[in-house]
Length: 413
Image (tube, rainbow, N blue to C red):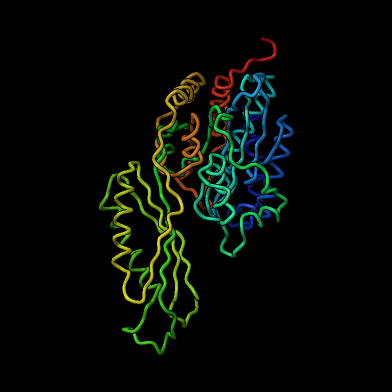
């Protein structure tokens, strides 16, 4: 266990060095130089652990341990390795590292799976560069079409394919994966909240993941001189956007039941100190454990937008992502709880308030997910931290569960 912890700490430390903002958290955007560095590290470790490595046309990374059963579907374990700007080192990579160490335990214990084991590292879960989020898993499962993928561009107008080629990836490789090739998906993630730490429980077995939707709203008015345009003659896109955004919290509060609504990005054009803003583009993120609450808030959002479509003001709303609330597979949940009990690792059931790749995979395969505590409940910031002991606990639980799901046997049996 001590060696396992030290390897986990080494992985996290190495990956945290691949950041565009040294000394100010982890900034590793998809298809960036830092993506390439982290990718090369992961490829090296996958090969070291005896895995056969490949990438798909999105740049998702797979390390496979073949099974004895011909053409059998794989048990996938992993998470994402991109970050938000100035984020922490654990959100995503902890799950990839856990997968790597499960593979290491298969090799160390000479475990031969009947069904293949695949360790996966997914791209653009955060949506920090190309928007929408969950891109890697949505691409694998076909929720993101190749056509729509090609249309995506970052804030500087760089397309996904251009960015891929720049770091040596091949966008012509196969993209969507046949669901018949996937037997199950397991994901470890930091909780990103305070519950496990407050309860002093090292493992959370996820029962369900919240539903979410994201919109990009564009408000277009008319630019003008800040000093010479009278207040009653203005079509100020920023003032209109600010008035709308200020009402969003009340829409969520009215709905209740844990419904939340967030504006996380705001871009102003032409962004001059003495120019009336002509256009604003901002995001809206809506989440709830019940789909009906999400739908109600979407309806209220559309009504609010309609009420601001005044003379000279154009407002459009593009839905970039919609994910229904997802329940984890009951049998895998039971296996995770049994493994925790057998290993004498305390656990509790927990629901996820954040979206994860697991929720996408749950549409096409059986999915299980574990949480580990986050110090002070913090995430998406440089202060994000989780204990390597807790990651090691999760690795042991996944190892026992993966042996059952892959119907593995040791060489001496």
